[in-house]
Amino acid sequence: MKKNLLFLLLIIFSFSAFSQGLGGNSTYQFLNSFANARIAALGGSAIASNDSDLNVAYQNPSLLMPQMNNQLSYNYVKMFADIGSGYAGFAKHFDKLGTFAAGIQYFSYGNFTKTTPDGQIQGTFTAGEYCYHVSYARKIKKINYGGNLKFINSNLETYNSFGVAIDLAASYYNPRQLTTYTAVISNLGTQLSTYRQGNYENLPLNVQLGFSKKFAHNPLRISLVAHNLQNLGNNLYQIANRNNRNISLETNEPIQEDFSITQEILSHLIVNTEVIFSRTFMFRFGYNYLRRREVGLFDNLGFSGFSWGFGLRVSKFNIAYARANYMINRSTDHFSITTNINDFYKKKKQ
Image 1 (cartoon, rainbow, N blue to C red):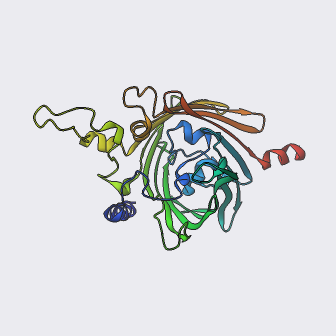
Image 2 (cartoon, rainbow, N blue to C red):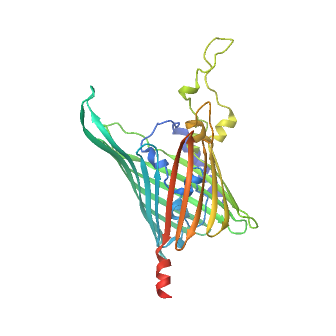
Image 3 (spheres, one colour):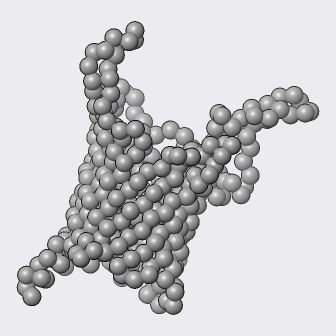
């Protein structure tokens, strides 16, 4: 276990050596957005939530388990303007091989009016992005290993791009302490074809470590996720509308935004919790500091970066809802439904 952890840390720091900061330095950014209600309620990352959820397994393929055999899921989120996003997936387990899953993540940006530079209307066009994935996971000794193979297609008017990427993940669950430790490297890949000839762009690499703790005698599960570790020390960047707001009395020059060590650390952390009242009802809360800083209004942050949601089981279906807050009067509503085909077969047998 110690050797595996040391090897993982070496990989993370090697990525940090050549990675770039955030702020739009990569393409296919839709890969970092998840329609699933549970992930949204937990602040955007649920890689340490270990309880047989196919949607979480897409984000962390090492959590793909035999219990998910024949599990089917669909998710949808209504975003801003006419933008909509969704995910659908299915899992299948084979005793001698391991557990597999397949699915599609999509982003639809709606319809646009096409005009000439002087404003003459020429028609309409659409834009959308898609990710098709195949996942695999297997337990070796005490550690679960998993991976995603992703095929990416982006269509923006007449500009098209194709790409391929992989996710690599490992997780360890301690049943005595009810703790889960996870590590995920997402979107490690390249463009196969570019929007403009020869203009290759980076994919949104994301290196994460996660930890969760379920308490035996109360309904809480708390999780801590460290994300974008490939950008250690470079996760924060200057935001134009927050500079030049104050003038230095000594130099009479605008004061540029500065970052403290505390802010740098917090920018890598997502904190979330689940209140599990029963197997049929639970509440979820999350806080994402980086999201709060990036999209919250400077003078009125409100609940930017906070998210909440709930899950309930109705008959054979698990239904979930979440609301993620971005800025004042700007939030997204996420809806998810999951079921297992085996539950219908059991009823027929009885």
